[in-house]
Image 1 (cartoon, rainbow, N blue to C red):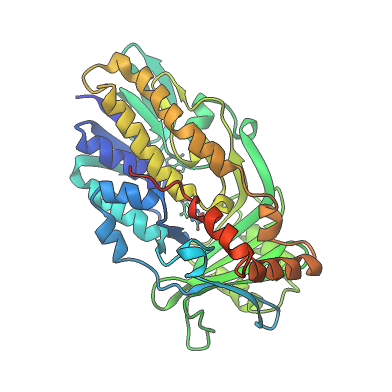
Image 2: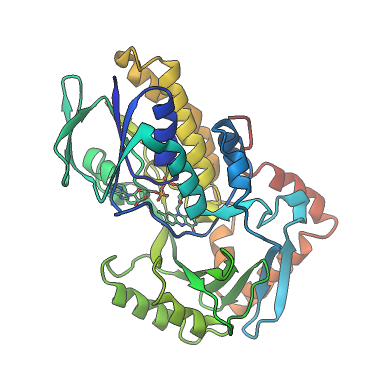
Length: 398
Ligand SMILES: Cc1cc2nc3c(=O)[nH]c(=O)nc-3n(C[C@H](O)[C@H](O)[C@H](O)COP(=O)(O)OP(=O)(O)OC[C@H]3O[C@@H](n4cnc5c(N)ncnc54)[C@H](O)[C@@H]3O)c2cc1C
């Protein structure tokens, strides 16, 4: 039976593992974290996500996990509202939608669906990938070496598979100039409620603080700021010190949220980057999801692309009958790339001003963004924006 190794049990990795497992491949997933990773904020079901999840038979289950969301609001340093966009805006295609769930819930549903068909190796990663006469020979960190017919690198924006096979990250990374910290905060009796609103406070100097709905009794918190480099991942103290420094004079709930960051088990901090590669496969090694094409969270399409890409890769492999005819694998990988390139190109083309809008530089910029948010929801602009927003997410049958 043909064997596939998927590196990374994220949205893309577990989806392709599930699909290839169902199609009869022997699937192993190597995930570097000791268990399925939790954390992450809301992901949007619009467009491709809904279509792929329906095809997998998981949509009903996903719909039971939706967050109670009422919209997005922008506030000043005293918590006064500058602008708001309810979930009903633009026929339900506004900034925040009613159909969102936490990334961790979606990851869990996909992971559980793969079930016993797929072998997961947690706390594991690849150390070397070498071409063998009939496959790829893989050296793992701990597990014994093994040979696979296909290796899928679904290990995120900082992919090790990409580095081992295609070259260093710097060669493919386009920096957007912002970084983002995110974590889950437990509410206490004194915590101001968000009441279903995704609330953002922008402060001059390209700094933004966000609180949004999470599971009952929790809020999902974000800090966005301008930088192109961060202290090393393992140096948590230096990372918290950086946040403390950057946000020291910011109002609203910033002090409370900075303190909460240190106690959160799922605190994460990363730069907003894009990944651009001229080709996503090399022989029997192929990249999928953020490792191949990260469009950055600013695109709002990371999950949609991951799900759609996993389906496109599994479909291409099945259509070429690569299960019985492994020599047709390269045709399958070309077909996968052709199917995904246009979507990825669209997603990576952020709308003009998107980076600046996420974290305006000046007080004037902050008020301009708020003014624009109010104006585009009124006639005559509302009609145009409703039409533009309807195309977001590439929703087509999967
Ligand atoms: C914990 C977490 C939280 C996130 N939160 C948000 C969010 O709030 N907003 C947003 O827009 N996007 C978020 N993302 C990114 C978002 O999930 C992706 O943009 C999108 O879903 C594409 O998914 P992916 O599977 O390609 O990559 P990812 O979701 O990043 O998954 C990659 C997986 O590979 C694993 N991995 C990494 N390196 C290795 C390695 N060397 N060996 C083995 N496994 C490895 C990771 O632990 C992870 O499980 C988050 C990602 C993670 C992992």
